[in-house]
Each structure stands twice: as structure tokens, then as C-alpha cells.
Length: 208
Image (tube, rainbow, N blue to C red; front, side):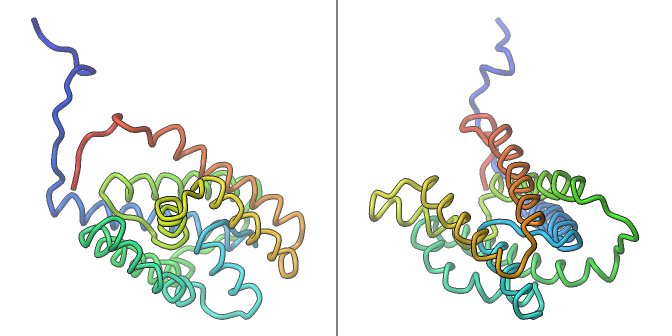
């Protein structure tokens, strides 16, 4: 009797080439989403949101801020997820920092609908993060921190993440117009929708 595809439980390991193309593709998707958010004057949560916040407040380059903010989190990534995860996360963060500065030189929007930027940008960021997650990588930052706090302190990761993202959005009201903050909430909902629908345990069994 032939087993159905759903009954197949074998795991497949990613090759180095597959991991490299995933890092490039995933960070490119995220960088494109960030470019849409930036053009529309929006922001999001996590270290991307913190980098946006400081960028809007100071005018400093977003890419350099994002790279610097993530530096303290690599030790946590190593402690909780191991060396391969940390190294791939460092590469993803570095590539994201470079792409976020180069894309505005390569792509310019003469007209951009804010609602489209929120939804399309959020979906692109969510899809990019999903690709990175499936290849045992991330964009570092607060995700690693909240998982560490959950493990060490018993604090619920989802609640801590939501609280930190809420604080970032509240702080942004000093530098970002309220309608942009509202659109940022829509963008964050699009990111979460892409992850919740597609990132489920057991659905994707390849490992790196």
C-alpha cells in the first residue's frame, strides 16, 4: 500500500547552497518590505522598529543602526540556539543592513499608496522571516531575548514581545504622525498573519 504524502515523516537536511540562497532571498524580502515601510513613514516592532525609531529621531542611517542594535543579542542566540544559528543570524543581519541602504538607490517609488505599503510590506517581511526561520536563522534582536526570558524567567514570550512592540509604537508617537503609527499596526498584523498561517510545527520538516 502506497503511503500518502501527508504520512511521510522523513526529515530532509538543507545543503549549504540551499542555506545561502535562503539567507539571500529571505533578507531581500525583508529589505523590500522595510523599503516600503520607510517610504511610507511607517515602522514595525522588534529591533527593526527600534532602528526605525532612532532613524526617524536622529536621521542616522537605518542600516548601521539595525546592525549595531543587534550586536548584544548574538550571545543570547548562541546560548539558546547554538553556533550555526548564531552565525547564520549574523550573516542575515549584516546582509539586511547592507540591502536596506542599497535598495533606495536601486528602487525609487514616484507614487506609493500607504495602505498598499502597510499590507504588501508586512507580507514581504513575514515571508522573508519565514524563509529564514526554516533555514535555522533569524534577524536576531528581541525575538531571541523574549525566548531567553521565557526559558530563564518563565515569562510568556508572546506577551513580552507584544509589550515591547507596544512600547516601541508608543515611543514613536513623539516622532511619527499618529496615522503612520496606525498604518504600522496594520503592517505588523500583516507580518504576523504571514507567520501564523505558514509557520506551524510539523508542516515543514527540512532542517539545516
